[in-house]
Amino acid sequence: MLQVAINGYGTIGKRVADAVRAQPDMEVVGVAKTRPNFEAEQAVENGYPLYAAIEERADKFDAAGIDLAGMVDELVDAADVVVDACPSGVGADNRSLYEEYDTPALYQGGEDADVADVSFNARSNFEDAVDADHVRVVSCNTTGLSRLVAPLREEYGVEKVRATLVRRGGDPAQTGRGPINDILPNPVSLPSHHGPDVNTIFPDLAIDTLGLKVPATLMHMHSVNVTLETETDAAAVRDLLEEQSRTFVIPEHFDIDGAGKLKELAQDVGRPRGDIWENAIWGESITTEGKDLYLFQAIHQESDVVPENVDAIRAVTNAADARESIERTNSAMGMGI
Ligand code: NAD
Image 1 (cartoon, protein in one colour):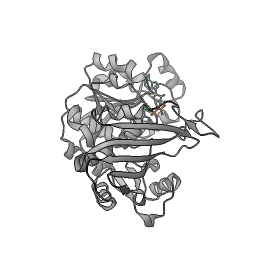
Image 2 (cartoon, rainbow, N blue to C red):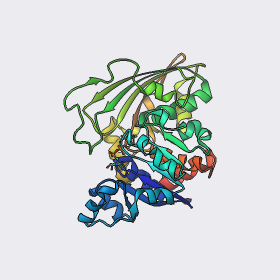
Image 3 (cartoon, rainbow, N blue to C red):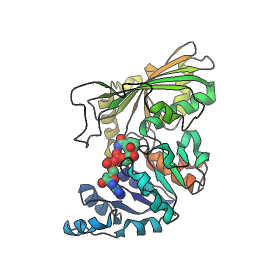
Image 4 (cartoon, rainbow, N blue to C red):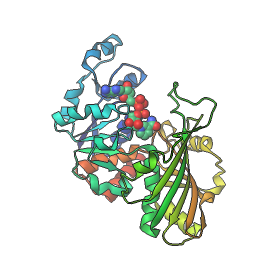
């Protein structure tokens, strides 16, 4: 059993902990938090040993009546792999702690690419992370774009990707984020950072991305144009995307007209926290014009990276190859709508 530690138990960390616990070959050795909020309370309630991420703040947990199992360095020492799910930039500060205990570490997409030796997406470059000590699981948007690009490159070749990313202003719990009533080109200058980030997975891919931010919290929405190297038709692309295990092609008869109904569907099918781990691609949006492919896909920012973290754990420990790992992760989590 792989012993996995989660440092940073927020939006991503708590989801990764639950996904790790569901795996037949992994155990959560503990989770670390900086403060005794509702998520700390829930971690203990869920049976995860809770460690203080900052020693000077450990007494705050005592004061709140929350039992600690120890300090974060003991957790890192006890783990085979640590998943760092701290806010952007904190992961880079934590790297020396993981090095001190010689514990392989995964970082999240909010970190700069140079925090790690490899940027990771299971479908695209699993092998690059095998036995690596420091791996960055790319952001939600980069994960969504990589999952789409990987099969298209293999099947048709890709000349160029152009994607416009309509991004949620914040996650539902991020009360301080915005805009509240505006539409922001973000960033105003082109390209947005997403294209270069996809190049950490596919270094030779021609890709331009543009970003906007809107007053929404549910999901991101991508409007994608891919110029393929060989001509095909929409039905063939649809078949290809339906065959992939982490792309969900929304059937027309579901009558889903946006992110709100997608989230409702996720809750109806019993997904934990209403999570959608797959890219959600509108079937009728898949259109071809010569070598140009167009489609819309929605990306659930809080959860699409979760199965990728699970696969990255197996990659760094060389516990399975890409196919085996993806199948095991999918089956344990209940992937596929
Ligand atoms: P979050 O703020 O929801 O959770 C981070 C947690 O880490 C919080 O519980 C915070 O208290 C804790 N923390 C802060 N400093 C810490 C420290 N020094 N040691 C241990 N814990 C500490 O953030 P999040 O949304 O889960 O984001 C985490 C990472 O995942 C970021 O790199 C982010 O860019 C990336 N990411 C986020 C999303 C998303 O939409 N939320 C999607 C993909 C990737």
